[in-house]
Length: 343
Image 1: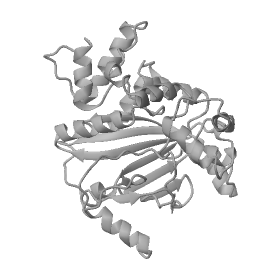
Image 2 (image 1 turned 30 degrees about the horizontal axis):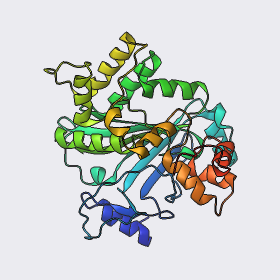
Image 3 (image 1 turned 30 degrees about the vertical axis):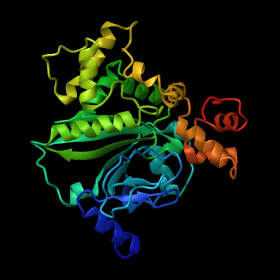
Image 4 (image 1 turned 135 degrees about the vertical axis):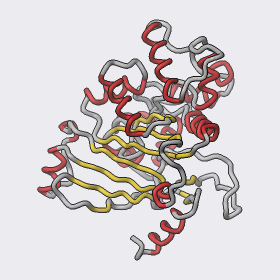
């Protein structure tokens, strides 16, 4: 990769603390993705391009270039991803050179491990004292590898241990939305990959809580978001204000979701008090986002993208590009039969 101009640029940015790429639709996503299929040599996966509907959130910041982000720009860190493929259907397809498979027959989702390149190239924190901000992302089809359902969390333990805890909770009937949705999608044969994505590592819990809060709130109108409460200190405040946590108690980051699961088990009919509702429903855009945020529905961003893409593309092409549920869902938006309240 270093022999290519883009590879040299990637290496330069990756070696810079907090180095970022500015992204527009059609730009190369700055991820070095190594794939290892059981019984076959590893290879570097083809580079992907940034597309409409790609899940990302950016905040106002001072950039090294001194230039503010344009309206259609996003920023992304250079990442390194390692993928392990072990399902027999995938392995057999690789051996036969097949490019298409029946994804519903996948029983062992591919495991992807992603981390900002700088954290590997220039590690600054000892695992014993650091906190990690992470995402677990899962799905199938065109959502691969970053645009599926996702959960954002903070942990003092390694993300590997945290995932094993989530996995046990999934298997033992946890009521959390993340765990319920994972079970449902697995039962329907709709999980072909799981992306374990480390977003940041630091010894400063305050800054990590702030980053978690920003990520969760920034994605609050995204139907793929599986966090049930606000992130960071807003989440702690939510737990206290709604009687789920005593004011004198300061739980560890990993304990917050055990508190939520316990509440859901003990109050199955009540459910969770809705966060931010009183304030947010005054905002018409947010209210529309809640309508779009129900299970299986399109996000506001996806609806707007469909309408724009429909000027030059077919429903089938749009379905592939934005990760809709099916072509019919896209067609109904184009025909004006659904989501008419979304501007």
